[in-house]
View (cartoon, helix red, strand yellow):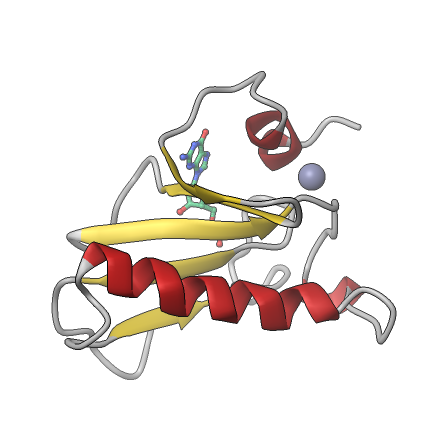
Length: 113
Ligand code: 5GP
Ligand code: ZN
């Protein structure tokens, strides 16, 4: 399957790794929108939040546990951060492999655009 993030997971496309285990991979966004901006993705190809089911959604709970660990390690947990999932056309999702943006190191604005 031709998927950018699957190619990053298997190393065909280089990335700056933040964290990895058997279920997930985390790496810095190529176009950071905050002092700290990384993405956490499941190793299993799931196209978007629309494709989550009772059978495959456990990885999302794991992703949030991993985010809690990484943000502590990077020193942004206490200050707080934002986790974002863009889904589909209206959500402005550009890469069709489920991913969670983690943005920190500055104060965010609300509402998002
Ligand atoms: P989306 O808009 O789909 O929610 O987010 C996709 C994100 O992937 C964007 O923030 C974009 O900067 C990032 N991205 C796209 N291509 C690459 C790449 O080749 N390497 C890395 N590290 N990030 C990428
Ligand atoms: Zn993929």
